[in-house]
Amino acid sequence: MGEMARRTGVSERLLRYYEEQGLLTPERLPSGYRVYREEDIDTVRRVRALLTAGLNTDTIAKVLPCVREEGERLVPVCSDLITRLRRERERITRAIEDLEASRVMLDSVIDARPVQAGTEAAPA
Image (cartoon, rainbow, N blue to C red):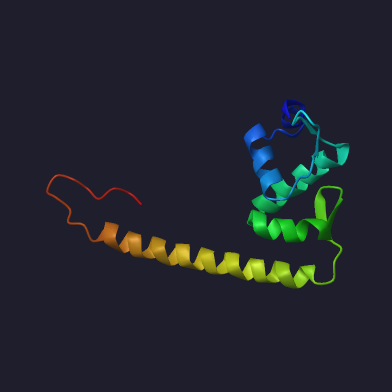
């Protein structure tokens, strides 16, 4: 596992988590030692890219078999994947909108604080 962590830049703890989530399936020797294949490095890279794109590991487990790499890009290969990814994009957009509304509300609270004599409002 240490070699895989070194080659991917992902901690051993995260590699175990990916295995628990069904994202990686290394061979297990009777001693419990994990044997990773060369393809597992690509899988870890795809998992990291999909996490960066905002997908959770449950969704990644469903999406992972339906993407392949073309250079630096992930390309969908399953017909229903675009629909699933559009739903995920809508979910992320709603989350962004909710966070922006929260920021506006927080700004209004910050801006409403009374300015004491001799002090100025802190910049936003």
